[in-house]
Length: 66
Image 1 (cartoon, rainbow, N blue to C red):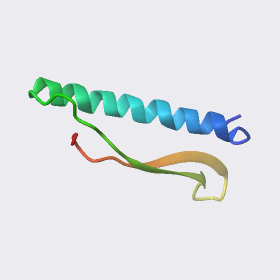
Image 2: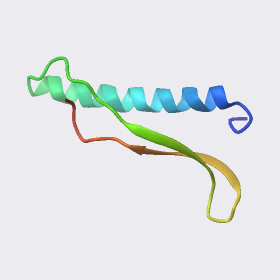
Image 3: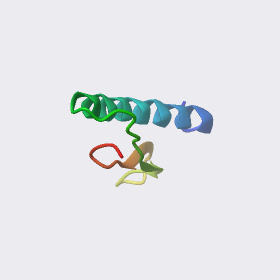
């Protein structure tokens, strides 16, 4: 279960962000920009609106590469 395994939860976030970053870099290369870097700020929230324990991610990702 993700809630009990913080390492696995971190790995899931890493896979998600890598997929988003790969998409951004591909789009940048199509426009002729090579070597662009992407970034994000993320945190994990464990409680929903009814105080049920449901881990989910909040990520702030700029639209593009630098």
